[in-house]
Length: 115
Image (tube, rainbow, N blue to C red; front, side):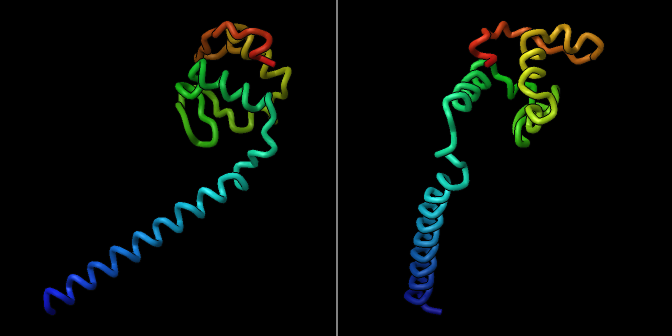
């Protein structure tokens, strides 16, 4: 194999890899809007995410497989507890976890943040 042949193989491989990478990057960006249902996100969902991040809930809790493993997984908490149950636990963690060895700190969330 000559140097010229090796260079051409390198060049074709590099260019085709770059084109494939760019195509997959743009295709992924197009699909994000569809896959995340961004059009269906309302103000409450966005506000909830901000509260989740403000109080660093991911330090202890897991959601969709991401986060800490000390506290319960929150992926299906709404389905399991409902809005009233979640509000009670968040406002009164010392009562909700009185018999548990795991203790959640009372973050002092306002009623607006809980809602």
